[in-house]
Length: 209
Image: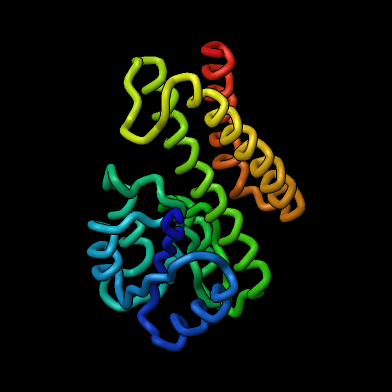
């Protein structure tokens, strides 16, 4: 069974972390806590995350500074960040959040359904990207004439790869519909990127077969 996607929750207040975990408890993911920007950066050294929920107001290293460090690292710069802050924050907070690399910005108290929906779509996009990477690797192995142990012979690999690609294409259509209904502009870029990658992989497979 594939590993469940991990979500990094960054907030200096314990009650906020507990609330986030409760809201996300119905989703098939693993929440990881960080009580500061420094803790978040340490967690990112050794763990791969699908998404970061990042509080803006924290003592010491705030959310903007933390995001800047994340975006400077090659390994973590592409992880989506959703900023969370209280509704009475400074009016330029949203602009600063997007400038720091956030894909979205939610004010507290936020609608639990909206947060779950956003996290769910980003997590599914992450999982599909992982599967596409695995299938692209299989296709490269097929093209090079080298298959990993246990993958079967060349005749059996192509039908299996086709089946997997079709499954991802069906799943992408479903997630695209969810993104359309949410009318969330933050999903436009990752959806377009994933669609482009899947199109290229399908074209490569069709040329091979």
